[in-house]
Image (cartoon, rainbow, N blue to C red; front, top):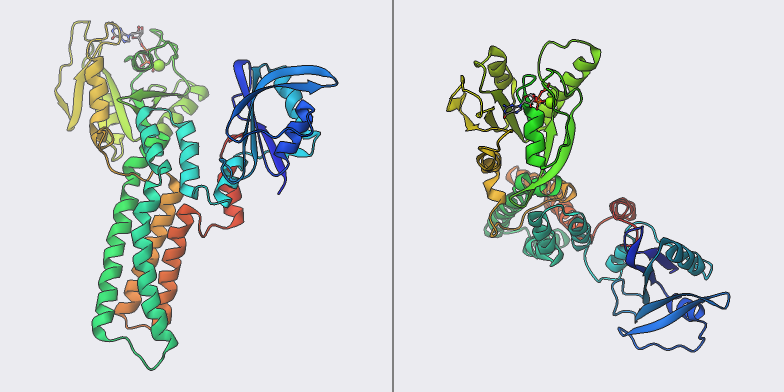
Length: 447
Ligand SMILES: Nc1nc2c(ncn2[C@@H]2O[C@H](COP(=O)(O)OP(=O)(O)OP(=O)(O)O)[C@@H](O)[C@H]2O)c(=O)[nH]1
Ligand SMILES: [Mg+2]
């Protein structure tokens, strides 16, 4: 195994920068950096050392040695906390590379940690999600997964599967012993129960993926009704251009905010109308796409004008997703005051005076209330996990069908093995090298 090095803090200027080394050569490289051949550090203890380059001092650093297997990766590791100067850090990493270490690939420290049995794959993915979490709720779910909750939830399902696989395999082995009917029934019942467990877990993805990817909200409506003004208001900064010219916004703009601790990706769109030119036509096409992709639509209506046919047409062209209607400009004399529009929740707001903005936020989050509570159960947040659960469910259903048709044990067992393989791939027991490579390439370098 070779020795790897990476900057583990973000690039750029900072108070400190941490460089990590992992692999059998780590300690030897540290000795070379401080020019002390016999240096024998006590593990897990921080020491102050001068890193030397060409007889001069490169930097004074805090150095920690973690001895294998008691380290994050399970290998010998060195952590060097230098001053956060990009020049010093660059020079240090170059120097380390000249001593038979190579730059780590993205996620390679965590990959080694998995390989050495320090954590399972779903925990490694949880570290990535925790680092990338944009809101508190997303961080809470990642922490739960990191603590091994998902692996535990799958454990009993896998045990049960193995138990029935063993029963069926031994029936195949000893041909003369056909499984008695009573045992076959028990197996069938177990499979039915496992299907329910696996599907219940898979279904949590509907809510869980929103924590991972954010709830996508598209702000739509006729030109000049105040979409961009409301977008800026929800973002709390002047992101989009606002003017009294109809057709100001020509391209969709997306920004992520946190509402009630949940990530929400807001898209301001070009107003719907007969396009004046090609650019506007492209913009309106993008509005339609944003509408199709959205988890919730926010239709903005100008309350100071009479309700237009177009307003209702936009409402009708919406898909099945929930929508909220914001009647904007309540600071002006109101012509349109409706409390219900095609069954959608209606909120009266003013992007100018802030009236109704808290009510608007509450209305946007209402359909996603299941994500909000602190005692929400374990949620599947990762599309890879969801896909594997769905496949496991498919294989279990296949086994069930084969049993109902009186197929041979070999056929049923093959499906059960597949289900086990899919479940095992979530925690990494049965994940191929190629797939591992793909997963870890989504990590940041130095992790
Ligand atoms: N009085 C009042 N004016 C508002 C309010 N919200 C927006 N406006 C004004 O309405 C005009 C249009 O606002 P925008 O936010 O650009 O409207 P839009 O829906 O994004 O328009 P397009 O980008 O052209 O589709 C601007 O002059 C805003 O200042 C409001 O709550 N009250
Ligand atoms: Mg606009």
